[in-house]
Amino acid sequence: MATMKYSRQRESIRDFVHSCHEHPTADMVYAGIREEFPNISLGTVYRNLSLLVELGEITKISTDSGPDRFDCNTKPHSHFICTQCQCIRDIELPDTEYIEKMAAENFDGEIISHVTTFYGICKDCLRKNSFKKEA
Amino acid sequence: MATMKYSRQRESIRDFVHSCHEHPTADMVYAGIREEFPNISLGTVYRNLSLLVELGEITKISTDSGPDRFDCNTKPHSHFICTQCQCIRDIELPDTEYIEKMAAENFDGEIISHVTTFYGICKDCLRKNSFKKEA
DNA sequence: TTAATAATAGTAATTGTTACTGGTATTAAG
DNA sequence: CTTAATACCAGTAACAATTACTATTATTAA
Image 1: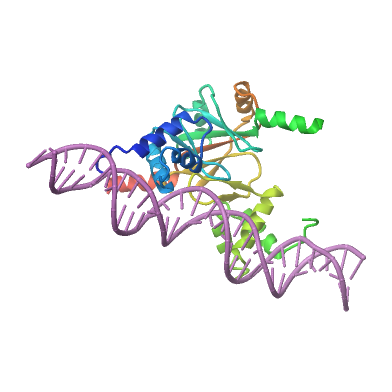
Image 2: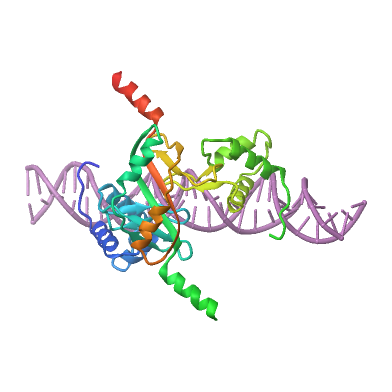
């Protein structure tokens, strides 16, 4: 890839991810973009999503099961994944640098970064569950 | 599944994972077991690995890219993933409970667990790299 | 010993993703 | 405003990891 050319599809994909705060999958992006570009290809969506990740304009979230998700928030933050509905929420944490330092003390390679992911039940599912119990 | 029946294949898979400390993939387990059971099926390996995970006898490690890995160490600990050779090493960290408490303060769902993964260059790759530079 | 059924081997199907191909859109130069 | 170069596209095929299906086999309890 010598120089990069503009493409309306890419711009649309970027805009969609940046305006979508539910950490969409490639398929969700595909569905969304199709409203504007009815015959966009799924391959184009995948290609541009990973391109945008390389450019640092969005980030990719890998999950334990199910497809990758994408995040418009490129500032350092953590994720919460609901084990019931699989929704992903952002969690801001104050300075987690020291975790790497702590880990470095028990390890003999070079630690460059770290990712912490939280699991549990989101607010919405908690509410749904309490309704069920009452019934 | 009413009651569980014994199977030599499952026992062999459990033993293999418990004696293998390099966090094997399903394929690596398959290759290993095949020495004892030359015509075991890959499906049997997958089925029993997830069964053993459910039983809490081993754990599963999802990676950003590439297949899942399996870990005989069921005690709470973190993982380091080398971004160069993809090897996975265990890292013991003193009490990380407070990370969840800290996250809980900025979040309105129920946090049940968390996983921290470290990325960087392992000792072996560091050494290999320094050899290359000298040459 | 036998009957019930969990587990198997082998194979097919599914899912998520990447690669290929011939044609199209964008860009820069004449 | 052409035209030429090429990044990008749509569509489709290929791929890797995993799961589901089916007929047979092994384990268990009666």
